[in-house]
Image 1 (cartoon, rainbow, N blue to C red):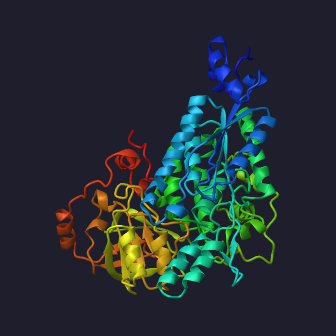
Image 2 (cartoon, helix red, strand yellow; image 1 turned 90 degrees about the vertical axis):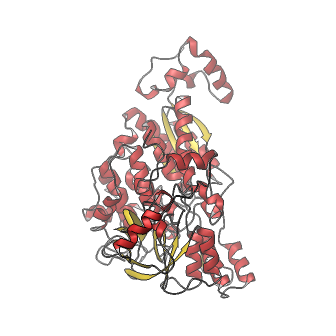
Image 3 (spheres, rainbow, N blue to C red; image 1 turned 180 degrees about the horizontal axis):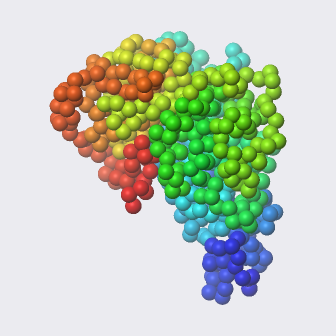
Length: 566
């Protein structure tokens, strides 16, 4: 009943063709297949729709646009769902332990459905932070033609009194201001009520926008997918074109690993730095590269960062939100600047079927009167804000986001907390003072388990006006909304015997973002004695998802992946 299979139906033909597959065809007819559809390549549309978070609440409708595009191009689309965990909602609670874990669950579920159902190509549409790397990891593992679509950025909230723009980080910083007596109950309620006006991902150069931009630079999204407003005609058209592009990639036999090369990952790192992106990009790009069988290490961020400046004046450290970048032309003009400066590999193939250089050939520059993105001659910072630190506190590395506004070095006395909640309580109650280096430990991938983000403590620090007076180090990680003198991803983590586990209150700690060092100022003899006396804590979880994750996960310096040793 079906034509002989060709390369565009490599997987669906196994599921659909021949008399023995009548049962499968019978089950597909009620979900919309006609006789002719069994002759078409099947395109899975992975929709990360959920009412869990505004980041994803509109994606069900975007999935319909991607479906229409794939069908119009000669494919047969099937929409399916997967999970998400809202970082902004779970932040500062035990639920945040599931956030990074969700990246693995998303990748596993897309791989599972696509592999099980015999999809020939895949469109993935994601919104909240872990959606992006999870989708790309699945596409890399499957290595079937596919496109990632970003659900888009949220519009900023407008404060009814000040008329200033605000977002979710404004709320978290207002919590610290409230604790310091700078904002009253009514003021906190006002900003809580206006900061999130509708659908879309958090509006600064936080993790979602960082990873969407990195994926576009990687070549796995259509041009400007990363810099579109969630509720816009442009985003609907982006989805439709993604469906079409996936069918075109099938016909051209261009697969994700053809696109996700070592050079492509270098492009992604370059764009992340130029945008002043999130520290989470280090963790996620390492994991994505692992799934694509590309060798990438934390040291590559240092090598590339020496020659790439920060050009975009974007939140959290900067002035503007993602919507402002969208309004002046999005990401392509910045990529054109970087390409012309010799900082991008223009010969990398992309999901358009064309190279980066070909995609950027006719891109117009930003308007001359804008100050969202600076020229190469006047950067915000002449080298990377993402610093990979080593030293006796981080023998296997740590990641800092140092914009330079905080200074480039910090020395202070440790104040140690076994977990995020204790640290946040101390900050809000005023026990953290100028000159302290806050140490939050047992929050790593194993110790958490799950490697929570520390947006609540860092926002509280800012809200209390201590941004330049204290530092914070952790074996956990940071939200893309965090800023200040912060160092995360310290490896080895405390739970696996890392030196962060032996710090005591009052110990001298130095963070040096010029020498890229993180140092505990104690004699080697004392360090050795403390390490010898250290004993591991009992696992916090012994059953279920978190226990499985803790058992399988690698260190943050290797991307915190769960399939390396299988």
